[in-house]
Length: 375
Ligand SMILES: *[C@@H]1O[C@H](CO)[C@@H](O)[C@H](O)[C@H]1NC(C)=O
Ligand SMILES: *[C@@H]1O[C@H](CO)[C@@H](O)[C@H](O)[C@H]1NC(C)=O
Ligand SMILES: *[C@@H]1O[C@H](CO)[C@@H](O)[C@H](O)[C@H]1NC(C)=O
Ligand SMILES: *[C@@H]1O[C@H](CO)[C@@H](O)[C@H](O)[C@H]1NC(C)=O
Ligand SMILES: *[C@@H]1O[C@H](CO)[C@@H](O)[C@H](O)[C@H]1NC(C)=O
Image (cartoon, rainbow, N blue to C red; front, side):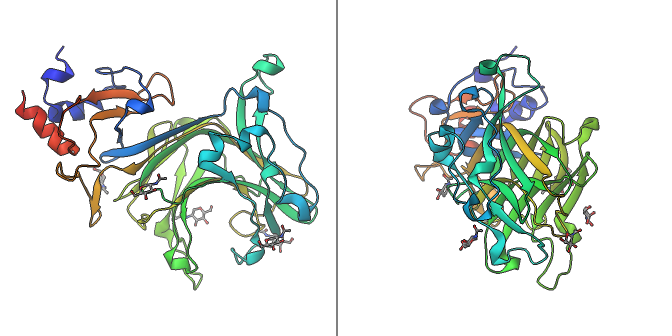
């Protein structure tokens, strides 16, 4: 078999993705050795400069389900539910939401919704037969209908400057009808038409194989629905959203694409977010048309075993087209190209190729050309 070193990469690159995994170059590495991350989206190959992985699977020392807070007045100021949420790595990236909908964020809301850090917790998998200390764990975001309000959960990125990404979570949604669970990008604006947002949403009142993908806004100020904004998809392979599955959202300069367990499920070029944005996971309801109402004391949960993201393009984006940065700009290029796909250990990147020390710090195209010239 030819090695990476002796084969022009431009011919090898498409081949890499025909293989079930990167069998040609599979060595596990760590982020400190990665200059950038290559990821194959539905239509093209993307390069990202950053990678983060949050593993909630072995945190039994933090596990515990806190009772929901009954009092609306103290709900949003509640303490975080364990030291995990007060320390790095969590706080480097995430913060629990504590806002409420009294500002009339959604006009058709029929109940006060309050986000509480108390609804964000690490939970032990009670179905596991292991003893308490060894039970697998996951992150839970809870929303529950209380007497006078809907208590809800959200974690939001501390940075609002993500631009292009591929984010994935091994997650499931459980619970009663009347709630939404979601993973999305968000850029706020006082003007509805200027909101930029790419959503993956599960409505717990839907059939358990239906999932909604939307580039907001999905309606106008006049209340007119924009049907092109939403793709109502079916979970592939007979899966339900109550099953554990890897939900993935790719935000690229040209399109957004969604996958379940690596199967492409939807893609759209309509209203693709353009500017730097936040990322958010949540579980909520406001008794409006989209969420529906939850019955008193009913609850729903977004549960997440891990969350992974590669983000920020290493490429220059001009007129919506990605273009490798030139070799003369002295930055942005990447010597060592890693991937978080096709790894044998989720969360840990594999090294695809490393141009070694002393190379021009060029963009991918330049490097490929260099390689070809050197054959
Ligand atoms: C993605 O690929 C499909 C199938 O080849 C094509 O129809 C679609 O136009 C492409 N979309 C983009 C944004 O390139
Ligand atoms: C809702 O948010 C507003 C504005 O931040 C705040 O003044 C109010 O106290 C909050 N209400 C509750 C019940 O938390
Ligand atoms: C992404 O890149 C932009 C532009 O270089 C930068 O301002 C921003 O801080 C980066 N975002 C994150 C989350 O690091
Ligand atoms: C998607 O599903 C929602 C909720 O069931 C429905 O209101 C909407 O009309 C559907 N949109 C499209 C484009 O099919
Ligand atoms: C939710 O319940 C309220 C009454 O509490 C009602 O006004 C509203 O129409 C209900 N919403 C839905 C979507 O059924």
